[in-house]
Amino acid sequence: MTDPVGESVWKRIDEAAIKVLRIPTPFQVGRVNCYLVEDDPLTLIDAGPNSGKALDELEHQLQALGHSVEEIQLVIVTHQHIDHLGLVDIIARRSGAEVAALDLAVDFLANFGEDAERDDREAADLMRRHGISEDVVTALQQVTGSFRAWGSKVTVTRPVSDGELMQLRDRALAVQYRPGHSPSDTCFWDADRRILIAADHLIGHISSNPLISRPLDGSDRRRQALVEYIGSLQKTRELPAEVVLSGHGEPITGHAELITQRFALHQRRAAKLYGLISERPQTGHELAQRLWGDVAVTQAFLTLSEVIGHVDLLINAGHVRELDEDGVLRFEAISTTPADELGDLIPGGSQVTG
Ligand SMILES: [Zn+2]
Image (cartoon, rainbow, N blue to C red):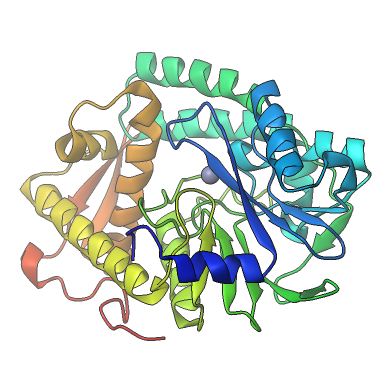
């Protein structure tokens, strides 16, 4: 399933007139997959980060397929992360292409710079509240601030909504809003070919981070990113997809089994955290350190997001509560259930369906 896929899968992707462009990013995740759909309109799904190197590679890879940036007629944005959207505006400007993205994300994408800054400020507050020291918060702010240049604002000319069918000459793509990894994750489902373009909603070789970020409606509530993500994965598990095309790594076959394995991973991780919390109340940062040790500064927010996401499962099931002591949050166990008897924290999580 996460093994390299066979020739028959590539043949299928090719027969669907979909080409994979692997564009370099400066991030740990490595290259990002963009998809060229040779249909009418000629469609590019995601565009890579905003760098000369990425643009250069995109042009070369398009050229090798007999196309150019100028020919692109439609760019589809899968979600709000910079490794996927940085070049969208440049390509749209050069080609005159329409830009399609989820309606709920249009404002965020238009105000990318300010929104990303506000995201960073709120992430800093969250990190402080969960026990991360000021020097790590400051260092991480500097890193994310410098990363922002790889993003760009995006002017969406064609907002699409969840459930809408985008009609191209040779296919229909159903828009599926599947938040979790980010608040704007959108998948595109070709029911006739049973191909799902999932971007970072589902990646074969790594479990997508349920990153904590502000809700798209501009409200102050904290999203339960992992809970939201699990709900989205449950919908995807039901799809009769035969090939899933990801934002990074190889195409996926056997997505239902992969999702079931991911649910088991989240269940195990939550149970482990519950065991640690049962010893004594601890901050999210302490818990992250106990699970992963001292991680690089750049990973501090990712690991904190992981911890909070899993503790949300425990809080929702009534096993843990949040204690606020002078603005610092600690998690405390409030049930006496042993960690190995927690039961299914993910409803239906262990059953294979679809
Ligand atoms: Zn990505």
